[in-house]
Image 1 (tube, helix red, strand yellow):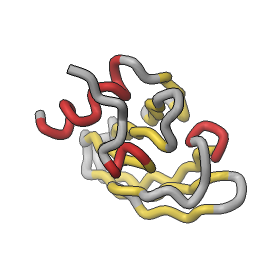
Image 2 (cartoon, helix red, strand yellow; image 1 turned 45 degrees about the horizontal axis):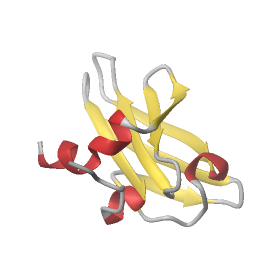
Image 3 (cartoon, rainbow, N blue to C red; image 1 turned 135 degrees about the vertical axis):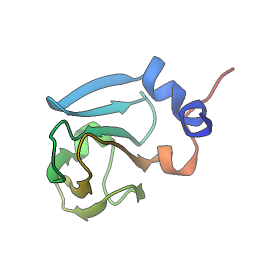
Length: 104
């Protein structure tokens, strides 16, 4: 709950970007980065590798927590492994740093 409470503005006031059917980016206007939700809906472990454009994130070379990353001029390629039927959160930029314009 502590993580959700800190990131709540991304989910309730943020902009939803469907990267894939099971990969979603939530960003906040005026903030760099966002929160990526990844869902492994398969009955076996799976590796995910996907790009997110710098335009959606508001910049490049931002801090990342929750996945391996490779930044380019166009954005970032994220990679992570998930156990069967598991979710993951990847925090990028201001979401890592705790700067999300939180209100109570």
